[in-house]
Each structure stands twice: as structure tokens, then as C-alpha cells.
Length: 157
Image 1 (cartoon, rainbow, N blue to C red):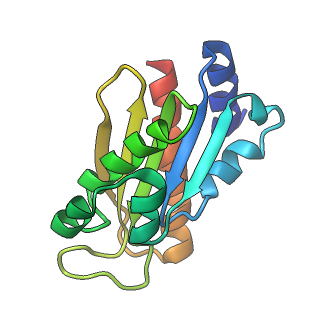
Image 2: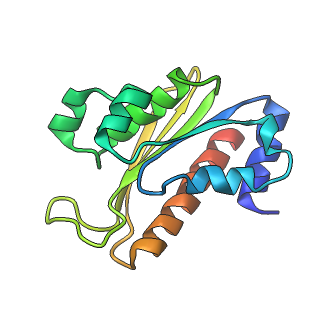
């Protein structure tokens, strides 16, 4: 059984709706979840917020947070995940913001991806993964897979 299928099954059992707020993955988490038959019972919505303006307008990310920390930061990932909960009917939300490449900088290298996980009634979790520079498609795939693991772990803990 795929990890996406596991997420859908557990969310159904727990009667939880899921939202995804994605930047560098451009909707890949939502696609993985909605590829599963019956996912409409638990996938509430997805936000593809590639630009800073979209993060502010659709998720309520504070412009001051973006200015202070940049889009690729745990602070922005936290506000994205919380915003996905606040702007949906979901009880569980994942967020992803990162640098898939090519490119990056000394301070924010290619392959740095920040994740946020917000669940109603729980503290929001954030973390950063350094995937290196295996190429854009691979960073995006690794990010999607990591986000799915975070969702599954949240549902099973």
C-alpha cells in the first residue's frame, strides 16, 4: 500500500480533512493524495502559492515574516501551514517551501526545503531538510515524499 493510500485510510478512520500549502512542489502532494480513489472524503483543498504575494493573499503569511526570513524559512513554512488550516475546513495541513533549483545562494542553497505541519489542537511543527543538488525534479520528488511521511506520522502518533 502506498504512503498516500495509508494517509487517506487513516484520515478517513480519524475523520480528519487534509489541506496542502505548496510552493516548490507546485501541487505534487495534492496530486499524490488525490491519485488515491476515495481521497475526496479527506482531501479538503490544496494551495499552490509559488509567489510571495500568493503566500500573503491565499494563506495570510505576514509580509514582515517574508521580509525578515525569506520565503524559504521555517517561519514562513509555519505560517503557510497555519494559514492552510485557517483558510480551509481541514484539521491537518502540510506546507512546503524551498529551493528546488537550479540555483540558490550561500545562505539558501539549492535543495533546502522547509516544511510545516499544523494540526488542530496541536503545536505547529516545522523542520528543514537539506536534499543537496540532485536536480530540480529530484528535489521536488524528495520534498513530496518527505511531506507525505510527515502527514502519515502525524496521523499515526
